[in-house]
Structures are given as structure tokens and as C-alpha cells.
Image (cartoon, rainbow, N blue to C red; front, top):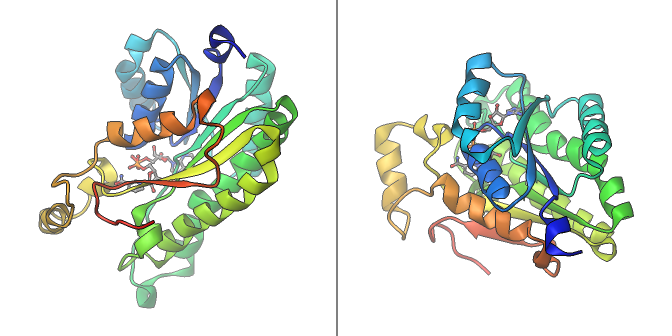
Length: 253
Ligand SMILES: NC(=O)c1ccc[n+]([C@@H]2O[C@H](COP(=O)([O-])OP(=O)(O)OC[C@H]3O[C@@H](n4cnc5c(N)ncnc54)[C@H](O)[C@@H]3O)[C@@H](O)[C@H]2O)c1
């Protein structure tokens, strides 16, 4: 595949108008990808704000409203994209929610809502893109996990379980698709400067920053560049891997 052909690769980013998703879309578009940002059929003003943010990229990014918990909608969306563009080459699963509570106080609803987005959503999207990718002999899947899936976090049994699950899912799928040119990796962000983390109290936030060796929260750009790296055409020998981007907050090998 030459440079001109690969520059036309089509990328789908779930959670695409979120804190990290917006920057992932932007960096993939800047790398020459045609990007479809997928997110909840959100309030019109939120989509408009997103469109203003990515306007400089001249229509390289388009928005598609889909709820990733709905398997049929994911199927219809991926079929539509493949019909329109001929292929779907890069999938980034960044849609995610938190439903924090200590296990003693966690309701079955808090558990299930989180699993449906953070884990079922990954299945629903991957299941619907994997046939096309393997039959065309090229694909890059990047799932956004979290450092809290590696270390566990108080009040996040649901989130930590789902995020660890995303990595197990990815390693298994990586084995199934490796010989077909499709790589599957995870990126595990540490604490980033996004609305998800802005929601915690100033005191806890200061404590978190004090525990990060690099001395600051991660930026969406720090995460997006890791995604872009794993989604590149020449990243074909990296699969089943987890790339931690956490400022040294959790070191392991
Ligand atoms: N921000 C952090 O510090 C951090 C750290 C580690 C991991 N993560 C993970 O990174 C990913 C992105 O997080 P973020 O900080 O950008 O959060 P965010 O809340 O800004 O973005 C998440 C996006 O997912 C979308 N979404 C939620 N439910 C959906 C559904 N059912 N269908 C489609 N879209 C849905 C939301 O509308 C939102 O736009 C998440 O998976 C999150 O768990 C974030």
C-alpha cells in the first residue's frame, strides 16, 4: 500500500466528542485519516462545539450519533461507513463512563450501566468491524483502558473490572486476527485533564498530581499521540500490547 492510498484510511472513534476522543479524532485527521466521530445522539450544542473545534480540519472529521450499547445500531453504522467509504480501517474505542461507589453501596444498575458502555460497547464495535478488516487484510483496533484497570481504585470495582476486561478482550482478539493484518492494542491513560477528572474534588485532584512522577495530569494530546502511533500503517508488529500513558504513576513491565 503506498502513501497516497494509506492516507485515505478511514477511522472510527467512539466517544469521539469527549475529552480524549476529540483530540484523538483531531490527531488522526492531521495524520491524513478520514475520521468518523461517534458519540451519543448528544445535545445539538455539544456537537456544534465539537464541529467548531475541528473546523480547521476542513471536513476530515464527521459526526455520527450512535449509542455503543446497542449492537444493531453499531452494525448499521459500520455497514453504512463501509458502503460510503469502501472500508473501515481503524477503530478506536474511547466511549466510557464512570458509576463510582464502594461495592457495599453499588447498585446492580450502576454495575450494569457501566459494563454496557465500557465493555459491551467494545464488543459491539469490534464484532461489527472485524470481518471487514480481516477480509481486507488490514486493521488497527485501539481500545482505551485505564491505569485503574491495572491497579484497581477505591469506589471503582465496576470501572476497574471493565478496564481490565478490555485488555483481556484485546489480547484474545489480537491472537484471532494477527495473521490477517489486524492489530489489537490498548492504551491505558493515567489521570488526564478532562471533564471526567475535573469532576473530582480539588483536594483529591491535588493528591493525585502529587503522586504522579511527571508532576502533572496527562493532556488529551499525550493520549492521542499514543493512539496515533498504534494506529499507524507501520505499527503492524505491535499487537496484544498495552501502552501505559500515565506520567510514571504506575510502572510495570
Ligand atoms: N480522562 C481520564 O483521565 C481517563 C483516564 C483513564 C481512562 N480514560 C478513559 O478514556 C476514555 C475517554 O474518556 P474521557 O476522559 O474523554 O471522558 P469523556 O466523558 O469526556 O468522554 C467519553 C465520551 O463517551 C461518550 N459515551 C458515553 N456513553 C456512550 C455510549 N453509550 N455510546 C456512545 N458514546 C458514549 C460520552 O458521551 C463522551 O463524549 C474513556 O473510556 C475513559 O474511561 C479516561
